[in-house]
Length: 178
Picture (cartoon, helix red, strand yellow):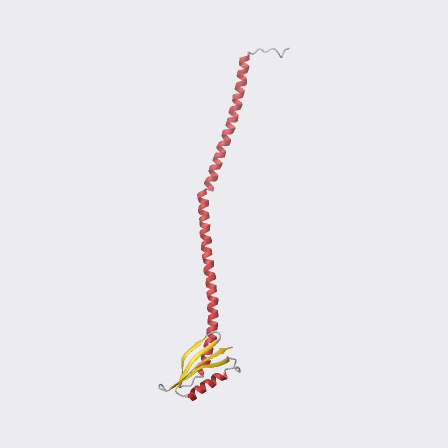
């Protein structure tokens, strides 16, 4: 029964409950406000440190570096390819020069080589002279290079012309290289 007796008026009780509710609501509002402020501050700092513009700038610089490296790599590959091809050409050139020198040493003084073509597989030439004996000596020298020295596989005479007006004999021949 003592509990049923209330000496305070009902209004004051309601007022105390309202004050407690207000204090609790203020506390919750303060906590929510602190959370909102710290979240906003964290988002601001994150955006400032890792802004989208700086990321885009980094991306562009990386792309530029990659394209420069790609260009350098392509140029280096092209340079290496050219150097290897030049080395192969100079190697072939030295064999061609040796072949030309060998053929040139056989030429007697009164025989001239009018045309001379050399490639990987054969040699073509037109020689002329005022003496058949000199042409014969030259052709004998070329014939000695067939087989035993390993220079020619075979030599073929394509054409032989006697020009009476000019007093010259012209021989066109082709030799297949080994």
